[in-house]
Length: 450
Image 1 (cartoon, one colour):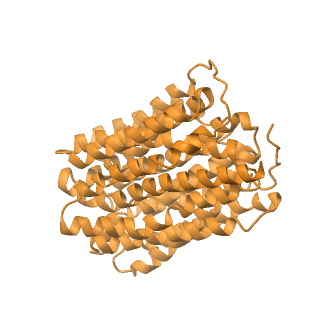
Image 2 (image 1 turned 45 degrees about the vertical axis):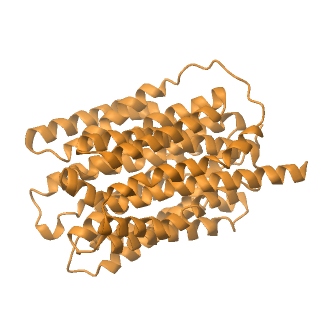
């Protein structure tokens, strides 16, 4: 039995890592391509919308994925997610205008939201509690190769040909990722079908996504139109967010709510720097896409180092302190990134800060996944996994929307030397919230799966 368990875990590890590697390549390569995309199709003022649409759409599908996986099993949402993700990438790469590109990115986001939750559920069902930290670390390690070559490959392709092949490359990679998953799906425990109704949070997810899109659209507008779009987005978010996230998330109540709050604010903080890093390096510091690709790789590599480091911590009570340590590192790094928009300050100061942020996220992200599963019943792992994935999408999406509005408003009162300052300022604010929320995770009680 033990030998069979090890074989199953090894197969799951291979399949998951291959799949996440393909997703990581897409995320990192396309991030480097975004400045060129908006310059070609629509202009910098729509940067947040073009880059953030995938996150806004992902919120809706992530909400459905947890319910779907718990109701019918992981097979259907997983394969449908891969299909939509590939189709969206192809549409984005063929887009003749920005509107078509944004639609393609939305389809990609819907697919991405259906992919990750089933993987988390499979880990909860097939992997022993002692080995889960290693799996979540491997999920982070899967970003190493893409982080080292993805942005650089994208930069080379853009400089030598065009930005469109960067998106086309994703399709064959996603198809290759399917192969290792077929055998492991047959080894999943027998699933008892339920007639659970569609989650009520789906409506909240749709409203939240619309609210975030309105914020991102507002960043491309001016005057009364910007204020109306921003006000509408904020109103929708105020109505929907409390119904979408676990009760107590906004108060960082001890347990899963505090973990979700920490995860969302940390991911949002990183996005405040990472998504705008290629744009600032290109527009302010004159870097080429190839050079920018190397800069993006720094954060991913340090993330991996942090994720590996947390696997060396085995005591549960000690592990509950790791998210707080990661949050503090993220705060320090985001403060250093405040120098990023200023051409007079060495860019390597902000890049050092970006590397610290990656290290902090690596420590906190993998640990939060393990802590959340260890603190809940196995029957609730689908919902918990969906909440974590929602935080991963919601934090960055909100950060993009808020930053977009701040940049638009700031452009009327700032000098060109500090035009992009709101991006790292938003990152610092979110990192402070993460430090506060992570303090509520310390001492979290472990609960054996039932």
